Image (spheres, rainbow, N blue to C red):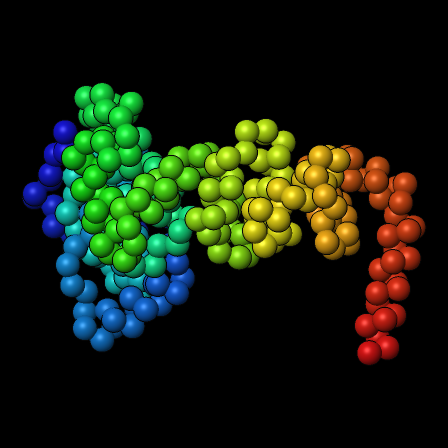
Length: 280
C-alpha cells in the first residue's frame, strides 16, 4: 500500500536518483523544460519514492534533470513509500497518457502495465480466457479507452499495441529503443509472430542496427539466408547483414583471429575506399 510522507515538501536535486526506468530522459525534452522553467519558474511537484537505498524519481525525471542543469538546489516534491510494482504502475501511468510516446514505447508500457496490474490484483486474471473486450475487466478497458481517445485511434488498435508489446523481452525493448529508425506497430506485430529464437534475434538485431527498414524485410533476409525463402532484391544488403550479424555475435578472440586470417584483404579494401574518396 502506498504511504505518503506529507511532512516532506521538497528535496535536494542531487539526492534524487534517476534509475531503473522504462523510459530514458530525452535531452530535447529537458531543453524545452529548461526554457519554460527559466521563463516562468517551476510549477507543480515531482513524485519521489523513498527506499532503503535512497530516493528515486517516479514521475518527473525530465523536470528533475532540467532543474539540476539550471543550477537549482531543491525541487518541490511529493514523497511516498511503495512496492516495486506500485512504483512501476506509477511510472507507466505518468507516461502513457502523455505526448511524445513512440509506438514502441507505448506498446511496451501498455503490456507492462497489464502484467503489473495483474500482479497487484490477482483477481483480474479470472477474465484472461475471455475475448478481447473482456481483458482484465474494467481496468484494461478503461486504459484502452483513454489511450484511444488521446491518440485518435480505435480501442482495438490499442489492444493490438498491448499484445505486440507483451512479446518483447526487456533486452529486446532496450535494443529497439536505440534503433536509428522509429519502430512501428507493424514491426512489433511481425516480431510477435516469430517463434524461432534465432530468427527473432536476427530480426531485432537488424532493426536495432539499422540494417533493415522493416521487420518484414529482415524476416525475408533471414529466410533467404536459411534457404527457406526468396533471395532479397539487393544481394549486397543481404550479404552486409550477414557479415554484420556474424561480427556482432563474435567475441574479441574470434574477431582477432578473423583479422589475422583476412586482415590483409580488409586493409586492401580500406585502401581502395580511401583512394576512391580521395579522387572525388
